[in-house]
Image 1 (cartoon, each protein chain N blue to C red):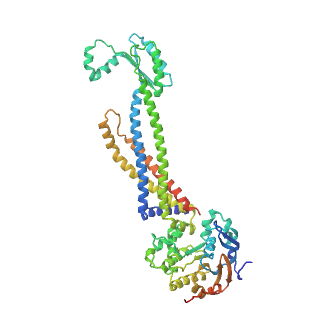
Image 2 (cartoon, rainbow over the protein chains, first blue to last red; image 1 turned 135 degrees about the vertical axis):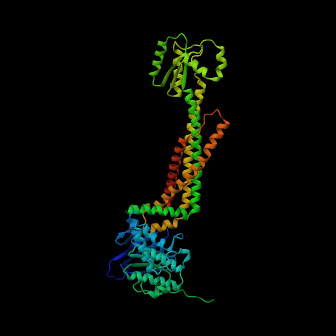
Image 3 (cartoon, chains in turn cyan, orange; image 1 turned 45 degrees about the vertical axis):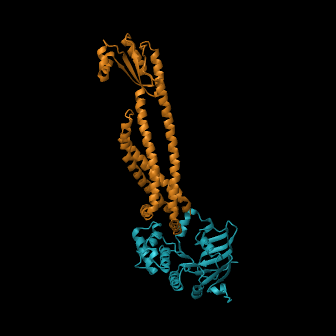
Length: 247
Length: 298
């Protein structure tokens, strides 16, 4: 059975009975069925090792499904040819927990880097990079190196880099995992602003407070299976808070 | 326009990466330069040996046939004509008795001997330039059968010397090719591993390029350009050191072993420069291409 809340818009992502089994025999994902319509904001929640990151890796086609079909923008990813992969990835903005910034490049260069690989003109690169940095509130820090920035600022640079080529789908894997609650909330505000422009956001997270505060769609994964899919969910509805035992 | 921008991106990022990872770049330059110094030194040594061998080869590839005094001129011209039409003969020249005497007299070491002789005891000669060293034996046999040859000292053929020369030349050629093959394999392996280390340092950058939608060639391009740059810098370094050592080496060698016809050859310097630069660029490009392949695959 496909678990999907009702939406009017067409699906951007569609998992149809997707399985992912690693060569060592581990079933990371079992019979995943889910659709994500355009403009949706989805939290993927679940304990460590539940399969959230495997799902993200399938979405960006770092891995192929073992079974089933996975569609992103109508493109079946298992059949996607290697030569079409760069074009597919240009439609996605990616943000990671560890930021993945290039330490030897300045903030501006890190953001420009994503456009340089696309063969854009120098003027357009500079303009778009400045606009992206402005969106994440980092104007004036263009010349700084990543090591001179706080964790939150580094994540903002990573977001600016992800949105600089104006993707329609944003995928974030634990983007607030390395940040304190206040900074994490600031980062979430940026994601909300991006989503408000119609961009679909899929975010894998552990952050209970943020999920509960945002009241967005929550897809809970446990042992590779979707156990819950709520239109306006909360984290503790999916997974009860662990009880503390006083000895 | 897009292709031009991609090329510009490859060149500018190769240049930036070279300087930003200076330690790794220096390691790559030094290892390629060492290999090219070894290869260049082998080429120089081979060329010097070739010079010496060529000089001897030129000397022994001229067979001198002594003509008996009573031989009619018509017979000499007839034999000369026979030799000239042979494909294994390059040039034939008849040297008269008078001309031979003049040559003999021109050598200051023969002055004393010249005073003691009467008339002209020196025979006329036919000088035959053969096409290949191994043709000398055949011409010598032919000359000895000719009726007009001077029976006491028919030719100046030195069979053993020529045989040794031919053997040495063959072994040097085989040795040269063998050394070149070993050097080529060793250099490709060393350069590939050095560049692979450099690439490994930048795997995060490669991963990122792939994630933002760069094509395989766009990821590979800057590395290949950087490889060529590294190779050319290493080749220039190797060339500079080899050229600095070449002339003093030749002069020292000539001073010690004056009888060897070895000389400084400015034309070979051009050939060496061209060979080293091409080899450096090719090694760098090949090493980068292979080294980066594992990390680039999407």
